[in-house]
Image 1 (cartoon, rainbow, N blue to C red):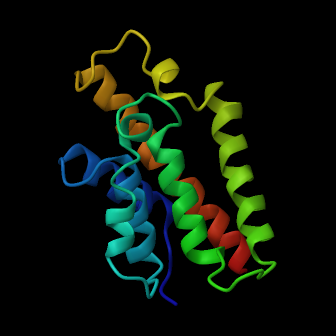
Image 2 (cartoon, one colour):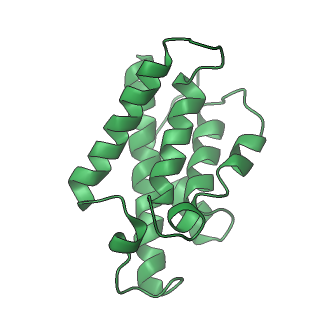
Amino acid sequence: MKSINTESIRKKAEDYYREGDFFCSEAIVKVIKDEFALPIPDAAIAMASGFPVGMGGSGCTCGAIAGGIMAIGMVFGRTEAKDPKVNKAMELAKELHDTFKDKHGCLCCRVLTRGMELGSPEHMKQCISFTGEVAAETAKIILRERG
């Protein structure tokens, strides 16, 4: 396996968002898929397309967290019925969730962006930062768990 640099992952995810290539959840899934050379089709990126702006613009759970949890599932999730490894995926998803919540107070997009105009420089700066942060944290979890 090639050397994985979490700061490089952070920057790539941020750049995908900053350049308008992908939104938060998509950027995270793409960078984790690519950097870890996961044998998963690009359709996984498309599966992340409904999560930005708090679940399709509804303002609920932060799309970056949704993308990070999808990426954890790509690595640790199950594909066979009743496979108990789902428990590991859930444990790591909770860890990512709790780390973000501890740092930012909540995961609710409308609370995190309260008072910001969608697409404003302030909003973009924050969401780009969240995207990079969650991508790097997701990579750290994967690296730690893979040993």
